[in-house]
Length: 402
Image (cartoon, rainbow, N blue to C red; front, side):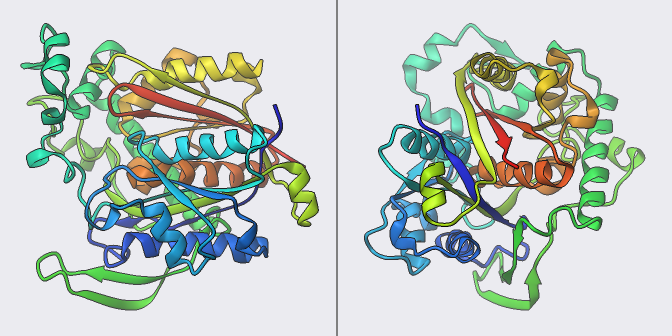
C-alpha cells in the first residue's frame, strides 16, 4: 500500500445558526475552501484528480452533488470531477478516507477531501419525511428493533435519546455532562484568544440570511473567528432544561451547537508532493470504520479507536492528541472512561459543544485543527474519531511529518 500525505489544510470559522455564514450558498461557501487550498499550495487545479466532499443534508441548495457544484463555483477546470459522501456526522471524515485510499491504491495522485454543511439554510432532517428521521427506517428495521424500549420509545430512537442511554450505561450525571460542556467553552475561548486557530481559518465575507424573507445582507468585515463560543458557568449550565427526556441530563449546554461551515484538505502521494515542490505536513497512517448498535448508536468511537490503534500497531500512550467529536458530552466522557484517556490530550482546543458541529464538514474540520495543533505543540501522532447516525463511527490516525 502506498502513502497518502496532507500538504494543506484549511477551514472556515464556524458560523452560528442564522449568523455570519447563513447567507452563503453552500456550494459557494465550500468553494471558498477549495480556492484557499489552491492558493496556499500554489498549484494549478488542473492536477487535481478528484474532489470528495462530505455533506449530510443533501437537499435544496445542498443537493445535486454539491462537490461538483463547488468545484465549478471555485472556477476550477471543468475536467475536475467531484462526488458527495453521506456517512452522517462522519461524512467528510469518510471523504478523507476515500481520498486517502484512492491515493494509497495508486488510482489517483492528487485528491481534495472536503466537507460542507449550512445548517441555517438546510436544517437537520429537512431531507426526511416531515422532518421525522424514524420515517425513513421502514417496516423491516422497525420489526427488528421493536422489542427495544428506551425512555418510552420503541425501536430506533433519536440521537438525543441515545446520548441519554450513553449516560446511563457509563454512570454519568448531569453535573458530569455540564462540567464537560463548560470545559469545552473555556478551552475553545482560550484557543481563540491565543490565536491557535488563526492559521487554519480562512477569511470569508459575512453574509446573513433573513429567517423569514430569505433576503441576504452583506455584513461589515469578514468572519475570521468561530462565533459559537459562549461565556458561561456551571450555574448557567445547570439552569438549562433537558431537551430530550424530562428530568434527563442532555441539554443545549452539553451538546453540540448547530452551525454553518466548510473545510478542505489537499491529499496526495509523497512522490507527487515532491514533484510539485510541496512539503508534506502529515501522513494518514491508518483508518477504520465500524458499525455498532443502532439504538445506543453513539458508542462506535470506542470500538473504532480500538480497531484503528490495533491496525496501526499503536497504543493510547503513543497518541499525542485526540479529537473526539463533541456531538454530546456523554459520548466523549464514555469514550474517555472506556479508554482511560488523559484530559491533557483530549480536545485541547474545545470541540463541537463550543465551536459548533456543521455536520458534513466536521470530519475534515477536526482533521484541520488536529494537524495544525500537532504542528504547534510539536507532537507526532493524532487520532480523530466521531459517532455517526445509524450506529457507525470512523477513526483516523495522522502522523505529523517534520
